[in-house]
Amino acid sequence: MAMDMDFNGDVACLDAELLQLPEVSPLTLKSNPYVAEKLFDQWLSLPETASLVKSLLNSAKAGVPLNVPGATSSPKAASSNSLPSMFPAGSAPPLSPRSSSGSPRVVKQRVGPSSLGSPLKLMSEPVKELIPQFYFQNGRPPPNELRERCLFRINQFFYGHMDGLQIHEFKPVTKEICKLPSFFSPALFRKIDVACTGVVTRDAFVDYWVNGNMLTKDIATQIFMILKLPDMKYLTQDDFKPVLRELLATHPGLEFLQSTPEFQERYAETVVYRIFYYMNRSGNGRLTLRELKRGDLIAAMQHADEEEDINKVLRYFSYEHFYVIYCKFWELDTDHDFFIDKENLIRYGNHALTYRIVDRIFSQVPRKFTSKVEGKMGYEDFVYFILSEEDKSSEPSLEFWFKCIDLDGNGVLTRNEMQFFYEEQLHRMECMAQEPVLFEDILCQIVDMIGPENESYFTLRDLKGSKLSGSVFNILFNLNKFMAFETRDPFLIRQERENPNLTEWDRFAHREYIRLSMEEDAEDASNGSGDVWDESLEAPF
Image (cartoon, rainbow, N blue to C red; front, side, top):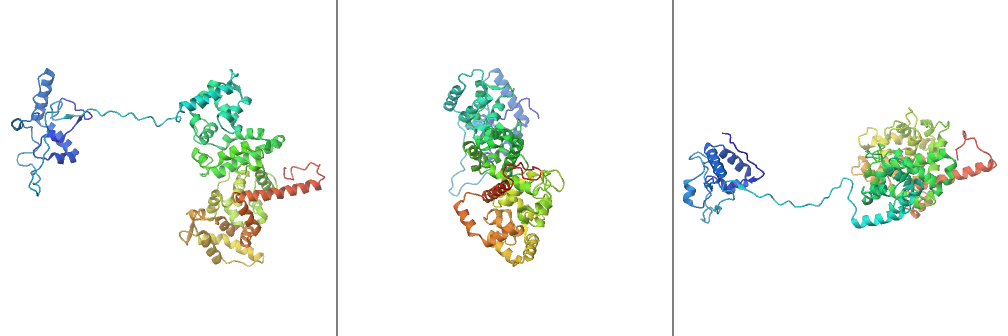
């Protein structure tokens, strides 16, 4: 039977004792609230219950004192006004027996009527505890003390500039207030001056930096927010161009490039390629905030801003490193169409690489080329290649070469895959009249060097856990470095111990820069040091 009343389950809380079921223990109902609710629903559906509830409601509306069955503590009243039972006569389950001590079952009795005198016990709403806000969409607001101190500094820099600061006047604000590298000044200026008015007022800067909670963000997040496009959640290569243009225009160590805009552009491209090679571990060209925080780019930018000699900033920004990369590319690109094919790349390092590994590189399995020309790699592709080839201790390099050797792409390097690449090395050693080293001996040596979890195959994790992983790849496809590893030049070993902070790439770039400089000096001397070279034939430096 449907009832003409609404029951708000959020306000009323069912008390098992108030059901007054002599056939069922209250303890049983308390431990099974779902059963209690079902019993209560069944009780509500009884005709006697509907009449009782309607009578109580009418009495309450008329102001008559309620006489609720079960609301009195009198045993006689309780027995004479018993509520309708859930169970038919004789079908109630038996009560639990007395305990072994002989004491009767203890049943908790309710003393006195409920607040509304009904079998439903209305519970007061719990007091809401005030929890401080812990999530802020635009970041946590700065503490008042920090905010006031920052506003005081802002007022100092904008004093006397009621109309705002122009872009050439904005650098002290970027450097002193925002604590960012100075070459971020134009990017930050344009981020605030969205209307392109040519000035940034005090209020506009306060609104962006202080009210926008940029003040409390870490420097990686600040740089990420400044560089990225609106509504984007990642950085692209183009997002770095404004700061690199400013770096080229203002850094004293790059001043000599201002007369050659073409090489300014090449330098900027190389820096960006190096950044994404090391930082963008997913390799999708989209640098996330997490990747930015995990890398060392921020420290390198700060170093570049403080150091006048750009060549001392070995990570990403060294001009000498750019010079080596570009000259290596120029040497291989014989027709200077800015593309390299297989025959060009096989000459790299005085024919150090095997044909099989070069074929594997051009299969684009380890990395898709960006050149968009079939069978050719562009300058960006070459940057990725040379960084991988000359510093096999880095994780991006290990991942690159692992994909090359993993012919079936199953994530492990097997004996057959490694032997496939070593066979060409063995043949080259025989052609050079050198004593060949059998693959079985090489495999035992590799197992000792890497110490894999399972000696029947090698995983990328195994290789990343060993400092000799780079030498394993050299054994498989770079004959020159393989022979150098076998001889172990004491001079190079001593150099590594003296400068443990230098990477293999740093040492290679330093050696090559000296060699290229000496060759250029000798060439200048033979040409009388005054002739202008033919740019179509010579390296453009």
